[in-house]
Image (cartoon, rainbow, N blue to C red; front, side, top):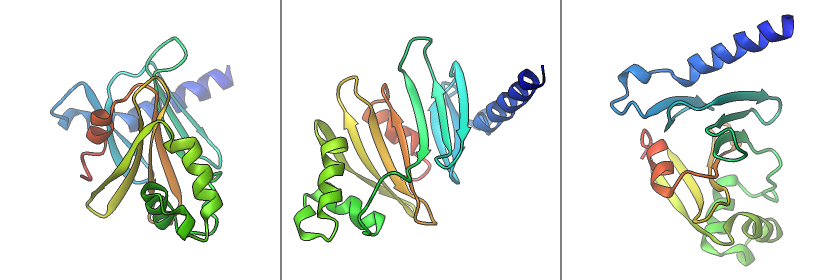
Length: 173
């Protein structure tokens, strides 16, 4: 009983946080979500909202009862930049300049996982740069950004299109 009550209270709290400022949203098909100090616009009415916490601060929104159709946010401690500054790491990964870097191996590995078969690029705006890796198929797409403390954060989805990711970041572009 205690677990059920605790889970319900946590879910109610997360739902309230996730729908913050929905009333002022001009498009009711989207809701505002705060993650790592940034406000994102994502499709409204997920079926499940889950915060797993832990070292990776995983926040997930599920939009289907079937596997897939999700949006997730994580702190990516497992991404190794080989000692390179994260912003420089992403710039070199996107430009193909891995061989001109001290973190050549890490950039090559990163590109094999995230760049292959995806459209890549950057979106820059007010005090924030987003590095995108967009799949045209059913594979997951990713947007990375670096928080003020230098930590790499990741947004991913298996159903958002490039325009949807861009809309989710519209507060900063």
